[in-house]
Image 1 (spheres, rainbow, N blue to C red):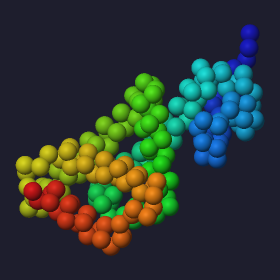
Image 2 (image 1 turned 135 degrees about the vertical axis):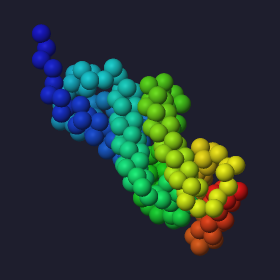
Image 3 (image 1 turned 180 degrees about the vertical axis):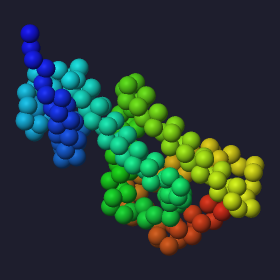
Amino acid sequence: MTKPPDPSTRQRLIDATLNLIDELGVDAVKVTDIAERAETTTGSLYWFFKNRQALINAALAEQYVASMRSLLTSMEGSATFLQNFKVDPLEPSRVAARRRQIRVLADALESPDLALEVASIQRELLERGAQYVKRVRGSQSTSTDVDPYSVALYVGAMYIGFAVIDLAPGLAPDPDKWRRVNEIVLKALLTG
């Protein structure tokens, strides 16, 4: 009977996979490279994952869920949800986060398991965003005919949609003009 690998091996495989994806891109990542980087065997890899794609999906899902959980935590009792309207979209950490999120969303279209993971965390993010909008509405003179869930979806879609400038940074608006437009949009969304 084969002895199962150390449970920490699974996390090493996921970490190695994410590092290789960042370095080489998803398509160039090979099972042997992952095992070597994780300092384990391909047999251990297949102990934890059905195949290469299952490992990649698990790694991307774990990374995505962790980053979204961090965002959810930071949203507790703050205006963080609507900060997407106020940040510099070209700030390097925002660009990197957006690229990871888009990669996961695209992969989720091809993987039902990953789609379930992503849908679960997105649902929670949208619900939290809607709760925030309701709180803001309750504390200010705001419109009650604007659906809070729709506002939350709009904010999330706007952030992902900004990926267009990642392809051609010359398309980015002036940061001050961007903030001004977002102030107007945010006010309109909350006051009707």
